[in-house]
Image (cartoon, rainbow, N blue to C red; front, side, top):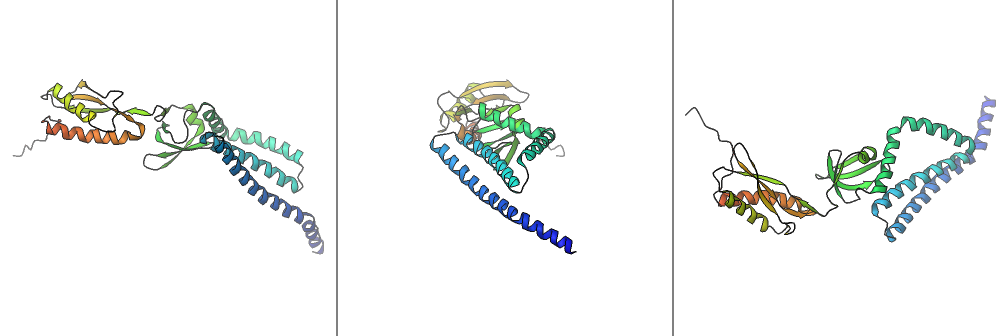
Amino acid sequence: MEKYLQTAQDLLINYAPKVVMALAILLIGLFVIKIVINSSTKIMAKRGVDITLQKFLANLGGWALKILLIIAVISKLGVETTSFAAILAAAGLAVGLALQGSLANFAGGVLIMIFKPFKIGDLVEAQGQIGVVKEIEIFTTKLTGLSNREIIIPNGSLSNGNIINYTTEGTRRVDLVIGVSYDADIKKTKEVLMNVLTSHPKILKTPTPGVTVLELADSSVNFAVRPWCETANYWDVYFDVTENAKLALDEAGIEIPYPHRVNINK
């Protein structure tokens, strides 16, 4: 028992200072890394670096500095850095094979930063999701959905799939289909619908809004109603035109067909 106690005492005397120093290096290092990342972000902001690139570089730099800090802490504990580097390389190969998806996501993040199909604040549609780009990280991109949900998409699948950016052009066309009865006068219907478009304050004058006959359906004549608006006003225009068109057609005595039920029990 005395032998074991002596051994434990020797280990404590030999390694306690190293452990304390390692913990001190870890805590101080994390604090310094936080300061460095915050300072570099402020410098990039002052120099006009795109906010998307700012966040990506800060994220990447933070991970790189933390890896170096871990190596320094392990070295302080007495582990040879050369041996650790060899172990890290072997482990990196094994981890790389096991985490091919993560590496693909990292590569996807780099491609997004190089080609910039979108930036923070853009409204995009990708991987079956629609939302405003909130943040582009090393492995994932975060969107804020239209119903204020957070959507996280892996960068690998995002960079390899179709991306629709609704913000880039600044304007959008609202595509509506409105059907009226076959008894309705086509010219009068077009005039009523066009008045709805031209009287709306958020619909652009250029490009010119359009109202055309789209198809002769089974029970209605369908009109393609195509106003243009700024991207930010899309849903306001969509809902307003839908409502105002119904009110205007009713006022003009133009029927919008709908299924009728007949009570055969009478």
